[in-house]
Amino acid sequence: MVDQFTKTNGNTFSPLTLGPRIRLPLTKLGVHSQFQFAQTGLNNYELRLTTPRVDLPKAISMEIITGLKIILGQDANIKIVYVNTIPARPSGKRPLYVNESVKMPVTS
Image 1: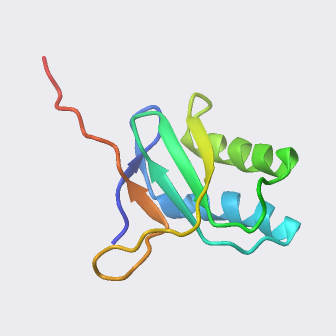
Image 2: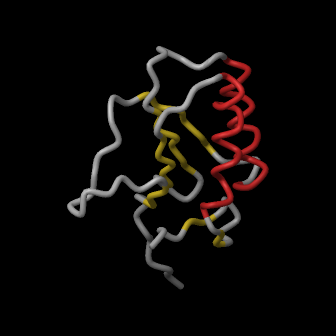
């Protein structure tokens, strides 16, 4: 089961649509690393990459962020973070997409 994600306008969408926007630029560069994409707040997102390189070239990072903003919204705050490993859940699975944002109750 994949966590539910929201765009910056509040509309829900399937995070599976993000995969090509992440994988294609990495593949062009010859990088085949694990990734995890997390929603950490209403407009905040984090792309976690396990890559042997210290940093991706700026052009590739911008291509990924620009592609993600087409889906998420132009006001999306997207950080690329380099990690040693993607943490596993108790089941042993390493999910590609996780929603870590705190749902705020709606008040009148």
